[in-house]
Every structure is written in structure tokens, then in C-alpha cells.
Figure 1: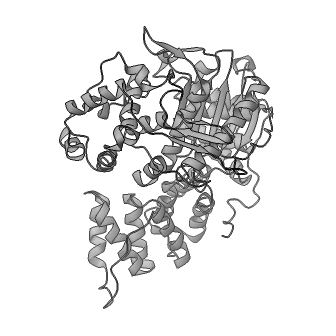
Figure 2 (figure 1 turned 90 degrees about the vertical axis):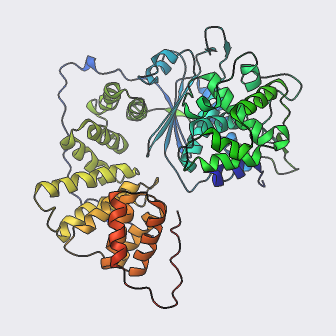
Figure 3 (figure 1 turned 45 degrees about the vertical axis):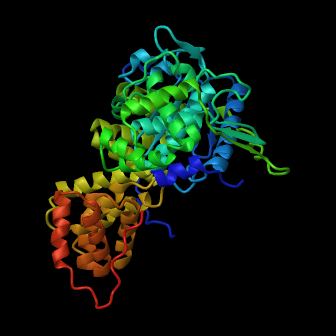
Length: 544
């Protein structure tokens, strides 16, 4: 995580073959739904729609304001690419939905079920899982109530920046400790930019005035949380916890002459394998929690810091954002996007209604069928789920979880026939692997895809060829810490492929895996390895 994020924060940068078909022309019979009274379905809603790289946008704010927002977002992407190229990569993609809410209390519908009291304390929401992400921004709320006595102006642009950078951090570095993520998110979201200039890490407005969301303004008259509470809590919905995380990260990276920068890097790096104890903190910073709390309080009173400012040379300004192609969303698009974001927020019933309403009214968009199939799968309605997923796969939708879940259902059908436990025929193997082969070609990569592929090959009557194992080994390189994947890949390579490849996987697995059944199985495989050839170099580490 540090290798990715910290160089981006601390330095500036200068300005195969197609998979086999999943189906072969079969006619897929879609599920039928009987609705006694269509008035029970949510009525169609009017939304603007735009598609930009990595995002689908739904908006019910004005067309003019939507175009302005999307144009600003495209420029933000350019500015972030200049400042943090390692963070804004294009080779790793998780499709995301962006919903801009104006009037009609539409934002409130997306509030997570466990945060119903927060509707006046936030104007942005972020949801994600391994495959999807969603950001919802409220343009109707004018002020945020941070507590009973504190309000600040609601800035939908800065709130969106915060959730966008959270999306990027999790996309590129997983989930760092909550306080680290929040501090970096707040730091990144304070970026100020235009086509010819970028200002980063500045506190205040640059002219001696403050900004509402500066940590020193929010915390000036508040007691600080103890560091052990800051480091172990996850309270991104608490503006003051967020402000203290921001203050500490900012001070370590940009304040006090950057004297704490090395300690910060060491501390965060150690947290990947250790809990945040005061003893570890002292080892890294040479200060106790109490001593650092006094230092942080002083930083709030006198925020001496450096910030980055870039001015474009002649002819090197950021490109003008392209025109925004905005149109009315189809009912299928609106239902799919809102339904999936509702599901991410825990509103399963409302999500299903949003998804099924356009289908009952006749929509058959393949992406809607894909979303319906996944929704039915979550609900445990596997027969309906498979029909939707088969239809979506036949239409070749770009959505790897569709093909993973379809493969799981096909594999389950094989199990019901009594084949699993014995050996799978070539036809059975092909039926399950065909959707997995498609999933491997679509972003984002999913570890479960390779694990199921390995499990199928381990039950196959016909052993995998070297080319089949090459795909599996590629998955090991992308997901080098998955115990089940490492164990199955090592076994298949040892018995059907290249023992030296098996040796590399085994050596790597024994270095990174804790005690577990998978590690025990790998230790047994290690005993089966043939002796290494004389003079052979030691196995190299698996590279993610």
C-alpha cells in the first residue's frame, strides 16, 4: 500500500485470443413474473445519463449543472494523474456508478440502513464490493450538521472528491487502516486545480483565510481523541474523527519540516502485520501518544507546512475536457444503476423492486438481465438467477461476476448429478470453464474465478494442459496471498505441469501463509517435490 500511495503523495510527477463461447446459440427462456397490481412497482423516474471512462452517471440535477460537474470531474482526473500517477492507473478497473441527487429527497433513499440518522450530517456516500463501486452525492442539502452546535456549508464537489479518492485508494491498495485511508482521502479532496495550475496539501485559502473543512478550524476548540482510539476506530461518518485523522496525516507528511515523515512511513508499513500499539508507535516516532498529542495540538494552533503548487508551462496546460454527451436515461439504465447502489447500501427489497420494475414493463437490456441475475443469486433464487445469467452471458455483457456466478451454478448442477467426488467429463469441464475463461478476460480480475477453475481441473478426468495451467498461474501472480488458490495451483503444477513452477509457488506460499489447512496441504506437497536440479537458481518470489 505504501509503495503505491506514499510516492504519489510525497513527490510530483511530470506532466490474447478470444475465450471460448459461453453458449452456442441456445435459446434462453427468461423468468416470468406475475404482478397482480403494477401500482405496487416503483414508478419510472426521470434521470439524466452519461457514460465517462470508468463511470456511469445518473443525475436529476439540472442539465447545465450536470454537464458542469462532469466536466470538472474529467479535469480532476487529469489533475490527479499529474500529481499521483501511481494512484490513477488505467490497467485496474472497477466499474463505478455516480448518482447526483437534487430535489425530491432522492439522496435519502440511498442512506445505508445502519446510518438513517446521518441524513443531515453528510452529503456523499460511498459503497463498494469486489466488483462494483457506487458514489452518491446530494446537491440539495445546503448545510451539514456536524454536531448539535456546529454546521458547515455543504460543498457537493469537495464531498465527491473525497469519495472518488476513497474509490481510487481501495481500488489500487485495498483497504488500509481506517484512519490512514480517511487522512489521505481528506488530504486528496482538498486539491484545488484548474487547467493551468494545481495546488495540493494547502491549508487555508492561500491568502491568510481559512476554509470550513480545514482540520485546524474544525478541531480548534475540541478535545482530541486519544491516539489509541483514533487508530482503532472506524468512524468516517464522524467529521471530527475524520478531521483528526487528516490533521495527523497532514502533519506527518507536510508539517513540522517533515520531521515525522520517515516515522509515519515506517509506522504505516508495520501496521500491515502488527496492531497499532503505543510501543510500536514509540519505536517509529520516538514519542509517546501523550507527547504526540501535544505536538498535534500545537500543529492545530500553528499549522506550519509545505504544500505543492504546479503551474503549467506555456503550451502544457491540462487538456480541455471533452463535451459531455448527456441524454435521458432509459428505464433499464435507471433501474439497474439505482438498484445496484441500493443493494450495496443494504436495501435489498428496494433494490429488487428498482431492478425488476423495468423488466416487468418489458425492458430486456443485457446489463439489466445481468444485474437481475446477480440480485436473484444473492436472494438464493438460483433457478431464476441462472436464466438471467445465461441470457446476459449469451449477450456477452462485460461483467466478470456474471460469468463466475454462472460457472458456480453450472458446477452445482454437475454436483447434483453426482459427478463431483468422482471425475468430471470433458463436456462437464468445458461447460463450467467456458464462462470462467470469459471472466478472466474482463476487469476487474477476481480471485474466486481462478479458485473455481483450479477446483474444476482438480476433479477433471482429463488433466489440464500446460496452456490451461498458464492461465491458472497467471491468477496466482495477480492474487499471491489466496491460500486455496496457492494450494490448488501448486498441486496441479506438481502433478500435471512443471515441477519447477510448483516449487516456486510452494516456496512463496510457505513464506507468506500463516498456519491453516491450506498451508498444511502445501507442506505435504513440498515433501513430494523432486530434488532441484544441481546448480539451479533458487525459486523466485511470486510477483503480484
